[in-house]
Image (cartoon, rainbow, N blue to C red; front, side):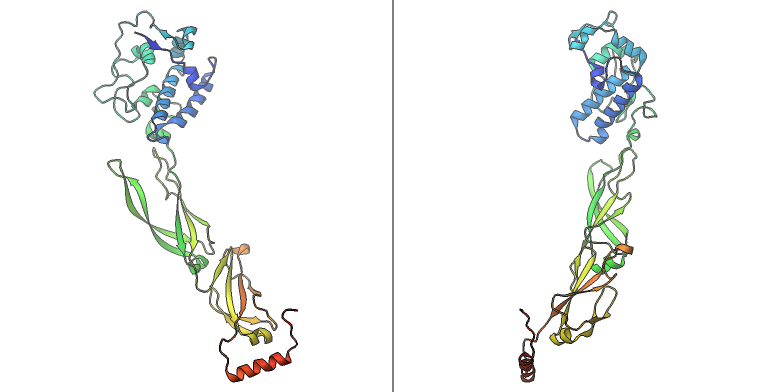
Length: 340
């Protein structure tokens, strides 16, 4: 029987004189990196996890580590070897009536040859369970507490999710409650993904702006191994409005003004998100000029935006004879030079 040497120190990335603490730290780091729960359907990571688990099973135990170190320096070069005297007649049995490990076969031939006699029937590979090999590999209480790497030992928070929340400008300005129905993918009893509806009651903070996010804690993807669910982020998308445009936290309203109102001044009714207000148009106001209504925009507190009222001077398309006569008199009388 010939099997290839496995360098457990190299597997864990530590030196041959590493302390038990250094070995434990290296193992924890690699085990978390390659754990199947964190690398679903990744065969390479699964293999790495088995190798790391096997290496730690030997190096964490002073007696096993001593036996391993005594095998000789020649093994470090990956040479084949013959097992020590007395190993020829050892029969290794892995897996029992409860079923073997779900990762495939047990530890490597190298491990079984040198250490298999320590376990025998009913050893670490017997019994069912998804992570049975991992539990056995740690020989009872593992470095993370509990009986080795059970699934709950690798509790991992679920992934965060994001979706779009469409709001009218009035909803964004006032805030309040809104019922939202989403579709989410979950694992069914058979382990296969399926889609189901999920209804949430969302509290909308007053003054949310376009593109901002509302966080719903624990409403994202479910966690693994008993870990908490991720968060759901609602990205706000403001719907177009018939009377207002949005510029960051400010909102803009185009106010039609007659030429004489702009020239003489006027008090006009202006719509806002809180209802109409009376606004004075100063005499001599030009088209395109913006007048400000403070605190009538989006946001909250000191960062609340304003409403900008942009003057749009409108002229009649069809003039009566009298209107035409008056405009002609004005043109003849006025010394105003708009292009000077």
